[in-house]
Image 1 (cartoon, rainbow, N blue to C red):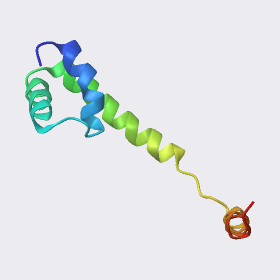
Image 2 (cartoon, rainbow, N blue to C red):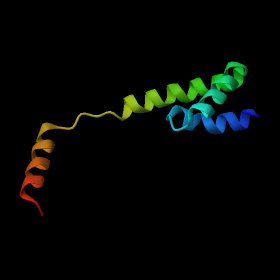
Image 3 (cartoon, one colour):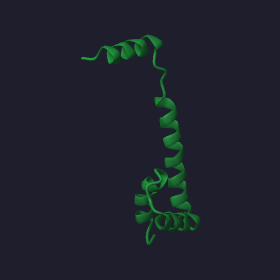
Length: 75
Protein backbone atom coordinates (compact mmCIF):
# COMPACT_ATOMS: atom_id res chain seq x y z
CA UNK A 1 0.00 0.00 0.00
CA UNK A 2 1.55 3.23 -1.07
CA UNK A 3 -0.95 5.64 0.45
CA UNK A 4 -3.69 5.76 3.00
CA UNK A 5 -6.21 6.30 0.21
CA UNK A 6 -5.11 3.04 -1.40
CA UNK A 7 -5.31 1.17 1.90
CA UNK A 8 -8.74 2.52 2.80
CA UNK A 9 -10.03 1.75 -0.67
CA UNK A 10 -8.88 -1.86 -0.26
CA UNK A 11 -10.04 -2.26 3.35
CA UNK A 12 -13.61 -3.02 2.26
CA UNK A 13 -12.44 -5.91 0.08
CA UNK A 14 -10.13 -7.00 2.89
CA UNK A 15 -13.03 -7.10 5.36
CA UNK A 16 -15.04 -9.15 2.85
CA UNK A 17 -12.04 -11.48 2.38
CA UNK A 18 -12.03 -10.72 -1.32
CA UNK A 19 -8.30 -10.01 -1.67
CA UNK A 20 -5.51 -12.43 -2.39
CA UNK A 21 -2.86 -13.24 0.20
CA UNK A 22 -0.42 -10.64 -1.14
CA UNK A 23 -2.93 -7.76 -1.04
CA UNK A 24 -3.98 -8.92 2.41
CA UNK A 25 -0.33 -8.82 3.52
CA UNK A 26 0.11 -5.30 2.12
CA UNK A 27 -3.03 -4.05 3.85
CA UNK A 28 -2.03 -5.57 7.19
CA UNK A 29 1.46 -4.11 6.86
CA UNK A 30 0.03 -0.66 6.17
CA UNK A 31 -2.40 -0.92 9.08
CA UNK A 32 0.42 -1.83 11.47
CA UNK A 33 2.19 1.43 10.72
CA UNK A 34 -0.73 3.81 10.28
CA UNK A 35 -2.88 4.62 13.34
CA UNK A 36 -5.44 6.71 11.38
CA UNK A 37 -6.07 3.83 8.97
CA UNK A 38 -6.33 1.39 11.87
CA UNK A 39 -9.02 3.61 13.39
CA UNK A 40 -10.93 3.66 10.08
CA UNK A 41 -10.55 -0.12 9.73
CA UNK A 42 -11.80 -0.78 13.26
CA UNK A 43 -14.75 1.56 12.72
CA UNK A 44 -15.77 -0.28 9.55
CA UNK A 45 -15.32 -3.62 11.27
CA UNK A 46 -17.56 -2.60 14.18
CA UNK A 47 -20.11 -1.01 11.84
CA UNK A 48 -20.47 -4.25 9.91
CA UNK A 49 -21.06 -6.17 13.13
CA UNK A 50 -23.72 -3.72 14.32
CA UNK A 51 -25.50 -3.68 10.96
CA UNK A 52 -25.48 -7.48 10.79
CA UNK A 53 -26.91 -7.76 14.31
CA UNK A 54 -29.58 -5.13 13.72
CA UNK A 55 -30.74 -6.60 10.43
CA UNK A 56 -31.30 -10.04 11.89
CA UNK A 57 -35.01 -10.60 12.34
CA UNK A 58 -36.95 -13.70 13.23
CA UNK A 59 -39.30 -14.93 10.53
CA UNK A 60 -42.74 -15.77 11.95
CA UNK A 61 -43.51 -19.51 11.80
CA UNK A 62 -46.83 -18.78 10.06
CA UNK A 63 -45.00 -17.10 7.21
CA UNK A 64 -42.63 -20.07 6.87
CA UNK A 65 -45.62 -22.45 6.77
CA UNK A 66 -47.30 -20.40 4.01
CA UNK A 67 -44.04 -20.25 2.09
CA UNK A 68 -43.55 -24.02 2.28
CA UNK A 69 -47.13 -24.58 1.07
CA UNK A 70 -46.64 -22.16 -1.81
CA UNK A 71 -43.46 -23.92 -2.87
CA UNK A 72 -45.05 -27.37 -2.67
CA UNK A 73 -48.16 -26.29 -4.58
CA UNK A 74 -46.22 -24.47 -7.27
CA UNK A 75 -47.50 -21.60 -9.40
